[in-house]
Length: 398
Image 1 (cartoon, helix red, strand yellow):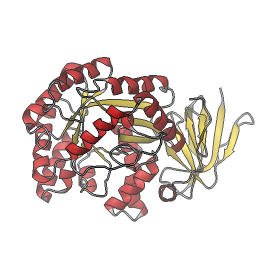
Image 2 (cartoon, rainbow, N blue to C red; image 1 turned 180 degrees about the horizontal axis):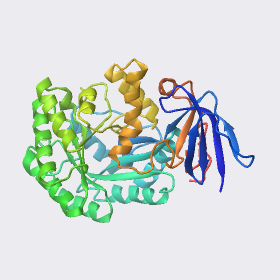
Image 3 (cartoon, helix red, strand yellow; image 1 turned 135 degrees about the horizontal axis):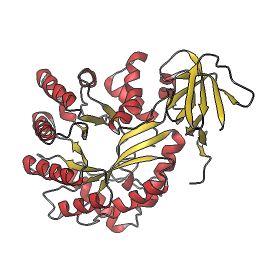
Image 4 (cartoon, rainbow, N blue to C red; image 1 turned 120 degrees about the vertical axis):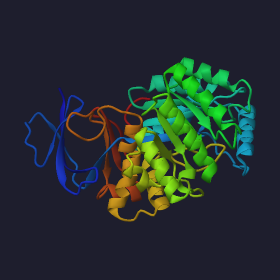
């Protein structure tokens, strides 16, 4: 059984140097100046920081243009027009969701991400084609990347007749979660929209992940309906609210009411911390025990040219958006791309602690905050004790 000792590394947010012993793909010991036999491979990690594999809690890997020739964006402003623009692109260009999701997966892995929850477009034009492509990626790379899939009615659920049938098909072939989008402003029938996706989730034994871009009190009304159905169907721990901009736009007393209910029902919140929208009240939600995960959202697609797959960059964006400056505040950003995402995805044996899988990234940086700000290319990625990427290059054949 192979044994490896990482000497003199800073683990997570700690300021102190420790040794980390790996045996048989698991972390067997953590402590200062561990004593080992001559048979152990020793890696001197002085001046480096060890972090758990990153988690992207909100992505759209089925439609990334990553690795393709540069797409000149002429993106409309309105959501409906953006979606129409995307459908036009698909209609006039060859596009393979397996190939594209595989491309961004390799970049994720090189940069230290080991788990992703991705929303996959389904509609009456493409059917479940994108779902099939991402599920193929999930199967092919299961030893290197944990992928959760959400069937996502990007073009609307009720406004496009036949979409629910396509979503049912997507769940039947292997999606993990039922998605929804803006029940009030998009479909203009929040009760029926939410009843429909909860019924499908109930039949499938699956969870819910709802895109909610709706502002202020309108969005908060949709959150209340989400809370009501989660409680009525005893779906605690199986529901995620994605974006939830409205939570950052309502009165403080209303925020507190919803935060309390979200915490009591174990409804997670996934945020991408966009520059142009308000964000959920992080501290208040955490005070009520709400799990918060960060995500890249789209990465270089017809919606936007932004994103590079690096969750350290996304953590920095969270810090900028929330105006976190203290190191202690930046711990929340790290939480969002590690523990928060892992808790949302209910991952087992995650983290850098004795008994957990030896899956982590070792970064050349003074500490976690330095790594977040610099996002250095110099990083080694390990899965179950095996190095799979180093300095921006994969060391496994994918």
